[in-house]
Length: 390
Image (cartoon, rainbow, N blue to C red; front, side, top):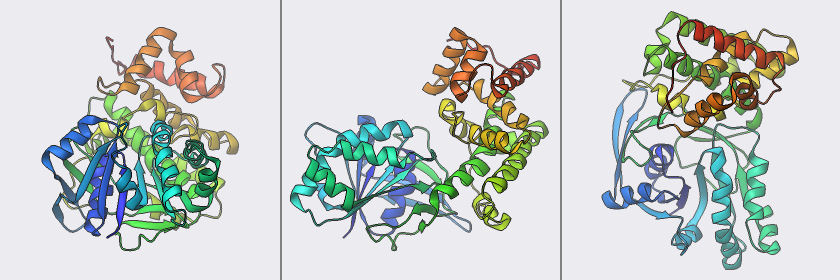
């Protein structure tokens, strides 16, 4: 039986990746640096995913798994040797650490079976980082011989995540997940995954990922950031507010215009295939907390909002809806979101303009930075910027 190694056993790792491979009959191994995540899995020896499909709601109990921490003894090593596919549902900042740990595993794999080929699939919404990830993994392998083997025998591939997965915590064993669209995976792959539902190899993935992150994640983040300031807890409630919907629609419209200019080879129908996902039956409302999580990453220079701003500058388009959305993001705060806490502390210590420039990656005197600050002050004048005691 095939085995998949899932590096990162949080919400997405368990609720989407583990559940999907379990449905296909694969053996599953989870690897995580958080002892709480692994302890919760091993204590129960099972976890449950409520899967919302377009026509049904399924309760899936997953029991066929092993779970290991990134311990010094490399308890995962035997399962690593059995794995042909490695799935990495990780935040961008965690890939380098995962590479450092798995470098020894790849070295041993080369020594044990140098003919074996493997596929490592990265699940993150950040684009244009696969070369960095590939370099981190390669450089973490001790010997040059094994590094050369890695170059020809391990395919490091990107993906486009189009599935919402949520739970109370990342170590929870009760998870909700939607199953309405496939994970799009950069091709070609070195291993066969055709028996796994919801995994779809695609060409031109880097371009498609830019489009997806801009057209879906940008308006989604806008709804979450602005909805938070207006006091909402869920995306549907925020979307029902006319002012929130107006801003999200404005962000969407300028994004579509910018994307069509940047990628003229993409038709409007092809864009709709990425933009609009089927509706799941009785799907639980998506939380603002999940969508707004880690605002520093989501407001960064090449991400969902600033990436479109750059296209607007290139094609002389009005970027004011985007700068207002970014201003809303600068004001986002949740006490259990470390990035938002860091952001608010930085604003309090360094001031609005310096903070905005650092987050969005432009000089303080750049027109975009100045407009973000202007939009922030306008929100404050409407009494929408909360006073935060840190």
